[in-house]
Length: 101
Image 1 (cartoon, helix red, strand yellow):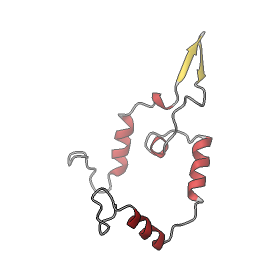
Image 2: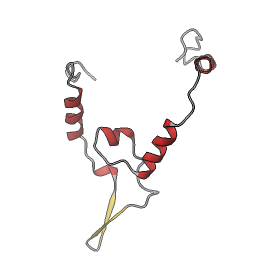
Image 3: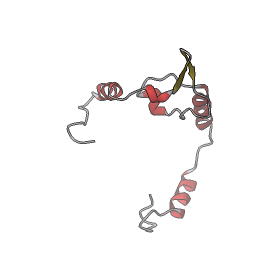
Image 4: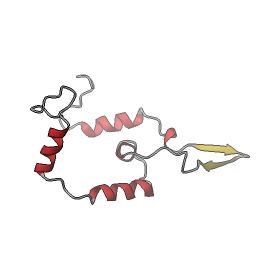
């Protein structure tokens, strides 16, 4: 995001609204037209809904999205020691364990 695009203090909601107006929603739920009727695409061909779709683009959360969100919120917390060990095990592209990524 460039300096011109940076929202002013307290103006983040306006930024999100402007971004939502500039993004097409049509790709969220593809449909096919056959004999004058519109039918939803098969679930296997539908794109996976994201938090961005729900919060920024104003889509209603799908059942699959709500289920996944619930599962993620019910995961056990990771301890500080476990996070530190994960960081040491993956030191990043530079390989320096003092600056884990």
